[in-house]
Image (cartoon, rainbow, N blue to C red; front, side, top):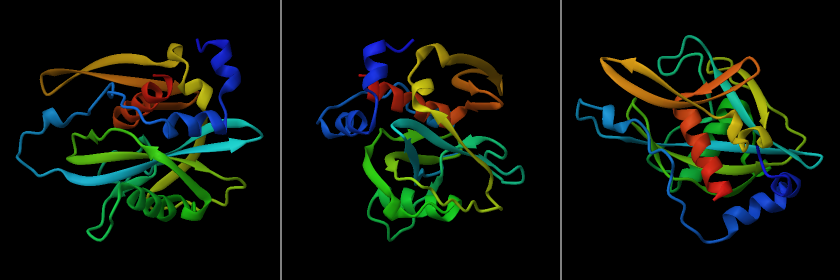
Length: 204
């Protein structure tokens, strides 16, 4: 459980201060890049970890990908994607991709900072960018990529009793992964890995 004094102080200012303080926090997870075996160069990408504030309560926004996509079909994800050659920062990539996917305009997002890179088994070097989104939100999901948009309370994410550590045998090798089931949603894989690094950074 989250300590009661921490639960009471969690808010926009607390979140800003966690990123404003210069500090280095080692990530819990760095991704599944060790499983890559075909020599592909890693492709830079970025996602936005959108934190929504409503009446003092903070939540994290996620998308559920459509079932026909080539990578991670039907899975829970953060909005984001691969970087374009002209983009100078991960924040630029994350904000552009977020606007394209769910219609959240860049000028509605206050970028707080970035988390450690996470390498996916699909060959992406992903930088998670944390942003505080101002309400009201006027979201317009891209029907091709996004099946659903939903939110999870930040307090749920920060409560370690909600973190599961599971394993699966894949191609003859046992893999361990985190999962955060929330209602009908099963958050796992790279999204849960980045979410655990977010948790670790905030609570360090």
